[in-house]
Image (tube, helix red, strand yellow):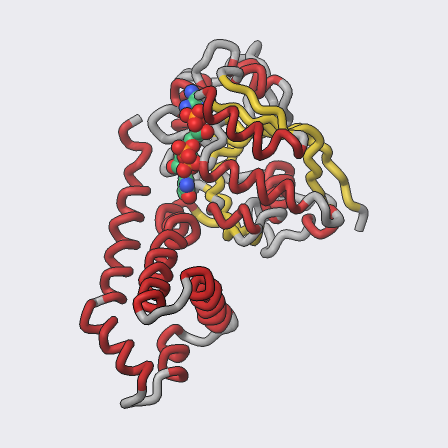
Length: 317
Ligand SMILES: NC(=O)c1ccc[n+]([C@@H]2O[C@H](COP(=O)([O-])OP(=O)(O)OC[C@H]3O[C@@H](n4cnc5c(N)ncnc54)[C@H](OP(=O)(O)O)[C@@H]3O)[C@@H](O)[C@H]2O)c1
């Protein structure tokens, strides 16, 4: 099937921890043939009778990163400037004007003022706006740009908004990126396909109903932080016994990758543990420490608490 190559200017509106991880992953994907980034990992379920488009590959043409503070701009320039990224401080509208596709990655507390900047509405007109802002619905994003009034005849074309939750693992192209689809706001394939293509550059992409979006976003984007904490504990144990930190980090990360790969291949977490731990053996001793300390319950509580907060994040706006 023919591949439609879309050469798009991409502007990161806000480029902090998450967006710069996505940017880093996208830049490192550019050395690979773009044909790798065209195939959705699951069939589209958006609109039953919608004809699907041909395959689409998004290739970034120019990339802009907009931030607020001078020192953030300076460090982004140092990191991404040599790779052709234009960094702007206090130039949000200018950055958006030059884009075909905008990735909104500011904190939930400031998205409203950023989208309501004078000139922003026109600058966004007819463009893709991908929001990675946690817990903020499409309705709220639209209201921040257009107010609550319905569309008028003379109004320019509105931007097409899509909500996405990548993780910082995008930097190493291991993000599990969710495209969050709200019940009353189904995405059309001409919107989805380019987003699939762009984010498949930084890992796996899945379309996710937003009714469970806060849970999915917690698992996909927040839980790597929890696993990193567990990893830190294991490394500290090795250091306590005399091992060098670098070496311990390498081995622990490999062990975690191994456990994750087994689960991803279909083994249950319990099976993975049982196959390693002989009753009465040394691993069983360690597992007993974790059981007594309540590690599994703690992880469960961390997911529930985080997801509840993600679910309520946008409510203040
Ligand atoms: N980090 C994650 O793993 C993660 C996971 C899930 C969801 N998210 C969501 O992703 C979004 C970004 O998170 P983050 O962790 O990347 O935050 P962050 O590191 O604090 O980045 C925020 C970015 O927004 C910029 N910004 C703030 N005000 C601005 C303005 N008026 N104009 C232009 N840029 C402005 C900041 O620029 P300055 O540095 O110049 O202030 C910074 O580049 C949040 O909405 C969060 O809910 C993040």
